[in-house]
Amino acid sequence: MQMKDGKKVCPENVYSSICPGCGLACGLYIRENISENGESSVSVDFRKSSPVNAGKLCRFGLKLPLYYAGPQASRVKGQDSGLEDAISETIRILKAAPAESLAFFSVGNTTNEEQKVFSALAGVFGLDVETGMAVYSSLPARMHNALNRSISLEEVENAGQITLFVDPYSQYPLLLRRILRAKEKGAEVICIGPRQLSVADKQFCLKPAEYVKSLCPSPKSVIIADIHPYSDPEHMKVVIDLAEASGSKILFLKPFVNSTGMETLAANRKHRTLKKLLQDIDSGKIKTLFCLESDLLELAPDREATVLTLSKLDTLIVQTSRQGEFFRLADIVIASEQFYRKQGTVLNAEGRLLSAGGNSTIGFDILSSLAEAFGKQPDFESVQKEVYESFGIKEAGDFALKASFESYLISDEPPEVETSCLKCKPGQEESYRSFSETCTEPSPASFSASLVYSLSPFMWHGLEDNNDFVELNLQMARMLGLKKGGTVKIRAQGKMADMKFRVSSIENGYLLSAQKLPVASFSGNEVELSR
Image 1 (spheres, rainbow, N blue to C red):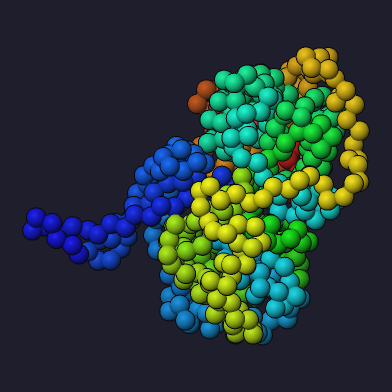
Image 2 (image 1 turned 180 degrees about the horizontal axis):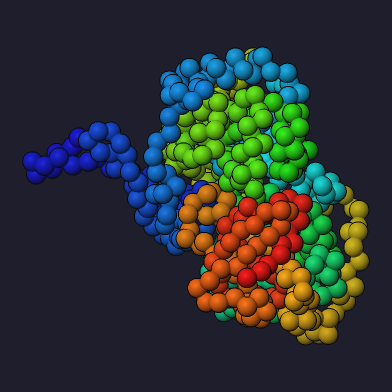
């Protein structure tokens, strides 16, 4: 405890860090205050020198004190334990488990250095780390470079046309500033999705099969989409073909801070989908699951069903710095340091190799101890050097950019989809349809709608956002006879949710939700609505 003017002053540590909310990895300062009893609390401050966000933060970034709230304690079989005991028990479990019954899982919420050692540990058993984002396994190898290719946000600002397959208002708010700057320079913005966005010059609600028929990007265009655990491979395939055939630049955003680094280091290995991972647990194929800084209850659409599935594991091992229901379900919790304290790097969606901001290697040392028990001997300096070499960068920093791929493809194989619309001349718009014409109105008799999640950092990280309502348009509300202040009943697969609603400017036949609903599943998004 420090003294100032005869008074006790809590010490403050300031970390120049990044936000773990999404793959943009916005720069910020974390101010950590230590109380008299040794407990820490954090506050967030702006870092204007960051080229990613120039000091601006979205609502999730401003709520990081909630994300970092409370220390995590190591536990073994429901009882608090020392870190060494948790590590020893993990080694014992892994040595006793048949390799075919093991799975290692991480979505990329930690550093490249930790991820690389975690992959080495999985490799001891002849396994890859599962990510829940199996789009690489679902697409032709020639498309993998396009998924990893990075462009800077400055290139977005300088685009002549921007085609958005994401909602920047809810999913990647700091991207919106770049799009608005591009519009000021004369760029046309085309948005694809059920929500009508004010930034759009043209808005369409399209299915993947309609993209190439209705969209006409040019070599001056930037196409922006994202990769996440619910991604539709057919959507991804057509988007890549559209970009390649038109000569457009493409940027794939990702919802986790180091998804780009993790996937690049993994070299596009075969992964299970999140659905298949849970099915293999449910069937008993996977008996022991080791999760690194990843919460399956936050990722899976049906929380209740996922809890039941996880109960079928013999052992759930979780290495984490966070608290929550998922970690209380774990048989072994290995407590790590919070993200802003970590020494290590992440690769953001632009290809910038950024420092997490701290000087602690607790998380890395835990994984190193586990790997050493199986004959591996990783040390931090050597692993970090390998990371730099993998990305072609000598050191981390705000302006350290990974070398771009020269082409979207790794072979000369032509795109599989013919893009006849690309023959359109500049200014020709006959192929475009109005927003209201692209989707079918819902049938009054069936009250059917397509449920679409407004995926955001709050949803992926389980942070409360007070968006406890669903959205539909005025026509649908009137058709259902909904009353202001009332609720709408949502049914699917024998389950029902009674939700507050808000009338918004979205397309007929769609229901939007900013939180996961218990009626949803991997098998389909059609739900039935009633008063």
